Length: 372
Image 1 (cartoon, helix red, strand yellow):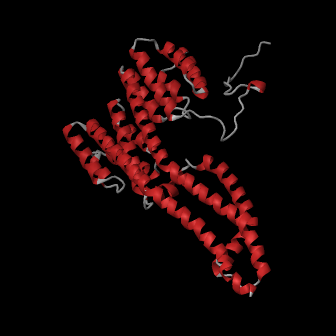
Image 2: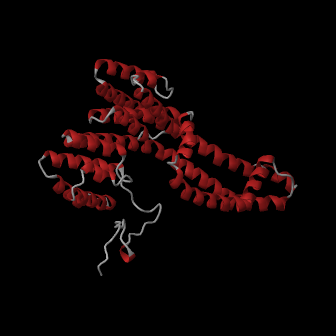
Image 3: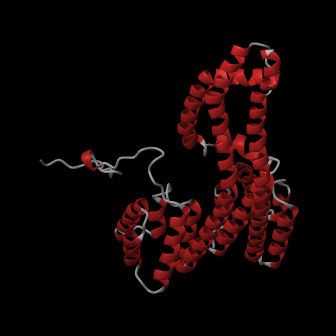
């Protein structure tokens, strides 16, 4: 028709019947384990002499994650058109974290892409192991807590009304614990719908807002102050900071840029805001250890080892030692936490359910008197 296009925008998910159906909460995302496996395989293939395009094609064909397959195909197409590897990965920030993109960029620029990918794989593998340890420690108490809540609701909805009818037929005054239990049972008619609606609303709201600064600014400081879990979360954050910072330095990423990226990937707003202040101090000419020591979230041992590493020119090695130390601390703390929580949760379940049973049977002790 003789018409020239002014702008062309690529469609992300196709159009019409070819558009991908995305259901919030049910669409599978690219996991950290997928990235760890992909990075390790990519480093191995590049080290074996395969071309980058061939490597990306093989990765797209053999990965088990369908979302990652689509992303790798797009990355391969971008690289084939002449875009750098790091820029092609950066276009998919929802799948590839900034830590990975910047380390690939540093390795690509410095000519050690294989080593950078190996460091990324090692980092992600340790992170997956750490998360697995935490999840295994938290599975038992969460299941017990859910069972306790379901048992309480079932007793209040189905069992207490039966006893209430029996008590009313006998007459007499009910003990205070039994009256409280009956009142809770009657209020379940209103409480259960409210809890159901609130749970659904929270399930929709939380994924959209959990990573916003206003939410993290409130919740993250509270997490670090929790009686039992606070010290554990702090150790996890420090281990993640040390490992990521070490990898960024070894990849040749500039210090200021590394501090900002490590703060974003720390997983806690307190550490992220502290590292912003540290980066600003470093920008003004100070060392890393001095402003880091002024932040209360970092233990004295961490700042002292970083200071020694700066003076000796072995900051990367010191950060690796800090990360290894806190990995062991987290593992030991989770084992202790598991050993401590198991009997506590059993006792909690016994007190809750047993207390309800005792409250139900208190009036039965007076049945003989009421019959007479």
